[in-house]
Amino acid sequence: MDSSEPGQLFDDTSTSAGPQGAGHSGLDKGPVAYTGQTILSDPMSNLAMAYGSSLASQGKEMMDKNLDRFIPVSKLKYYFAVDTLYVGKKLGLLVFPYMHENWEVCYQQDTPVAPRFDVNAPDLYIPAMAFITYILVAGLALGTQNRFSPEFLGMQASSALVWLIIEVLAVLLSLYLVTVNTDLTTIDLVAFSGYKYVGMIVGVLAGLLFGKTGYYLALLWCCASIFVFMIRTLRLKILSEAAAEGMIVRGAKNQLRMYLTMAIAAAQPVFMYWLTFHLVR
Image (cartoon, rainbow, N blue to C red; front, side, top):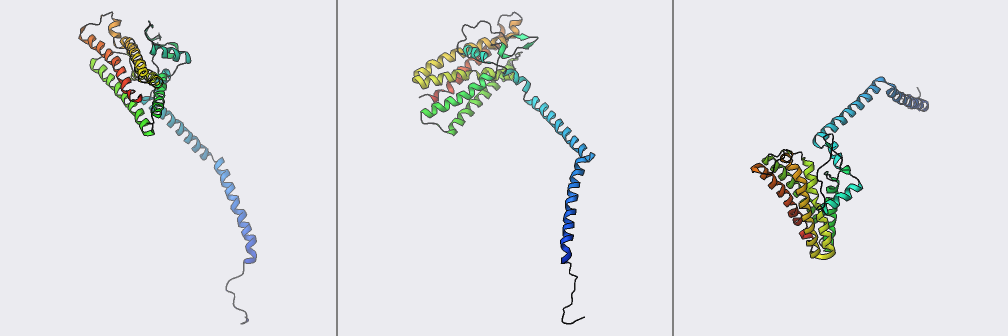
């Protein structure tokens, strides 16, 4: 070996790196495509996907059952089965109930008909829309007095909602203590308690247009109307047992039922004034 040339420890493979690298690159792409095809055509993968879909459908079904247990969605659909004609008649009945004669709810095979077929049936559409409208009108009233703020409007909405919940719970407790056998449900009580927002809206709008005098006159009329409406509606629910037996409202138990009906009706004007008097100046 010539001493002028340094010894080569490793063989020079640079000349063959290109083809080999290219060959390895081509081999790398092959297995990737092959693996994807294998996953798609593998029966075990298809079985796993089918099993996952089955689990998802079972989970959805279980969730729907549990949701319907705590929130009766099917029953709520009944209370929103309204149309334009029903809403117009119901609003007229809430504002002027004095000429209405038949207050009984119509039934079809022991099931109450949908609200759109019976103006006496309770609904949740009008209370829900009236509650939202009341909050908007309250914001308008506060804005005209330069007192509007998101925090104050949120407190107004929260206060109205809390008082509604307290009212419904108090009525449920009273019905339990008086041991009244009635077909009134909690949703019915929410609906009847929510009808007062219609009169509250009328009162606040009258106050914005005509000042305090208009507010008090309109609110007084709406308070009297909701009192009559609640008396004539709830007496068929709370006193229905005695009425079905043809009994005159006498005795301690029936007297309590009558007083409870009047107390629920009398509470509506109190809440209407309490939730609106500070909105008109």
